[in-house]
Image 1 (tube, rainbow over the protein chains, first blue to last red):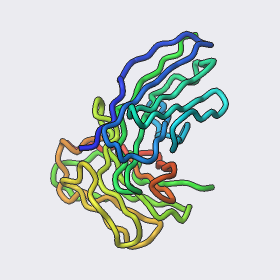
Image 2: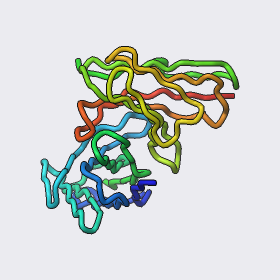
Image 3: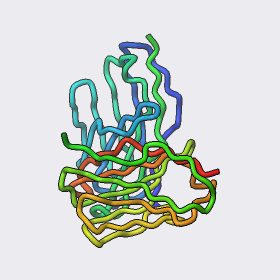
Image 4: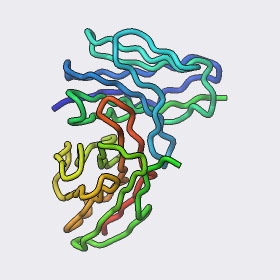
Length: 111
Length: 112
């Protein structure tokens, strides 16, 4: 059973701070890694994708991947109340066979 | 507008009454999936399809059926729904497994 683990939170950060979200995965053959944001009652939407070791930055968001340690993280700089949502980590392996999601981390940005 | 649509958005039904949730995408995506989302369990893949007439089981396929007769449509069928299938269901599509998935708006199903 391929597993993706996240701390369910809630993770509370003050407005303007850096939020750090972490995810570990069990399948060393995993190839693609995604962070989705999901507001309550809404569908997930892509925040970042990352495929190779290192950092990938997009605006206030930075995804970090370390395949040797089997973890992927998401940093949100200058956190805003509108960033309050659940962040889902997703991992795919061997092409589109199965996509495994973590349970998600609930982020609360306090004004 | 590129989108994934699902119908119905909300459904309350009774145990054993067959139902179908439709899913349609207008992006010419090869791959489509069905997920259910439950508190504390996250999103779990039910079935996926890599092309017309090609489907395979995800992590929680029991009690569900799917078909892919056309590229754009991927209906989810519950032949004999049970209360443990009460959940929030999402359909998603993508070009291939290494790209982002586009999710439909969700279908909230309650089985009494």
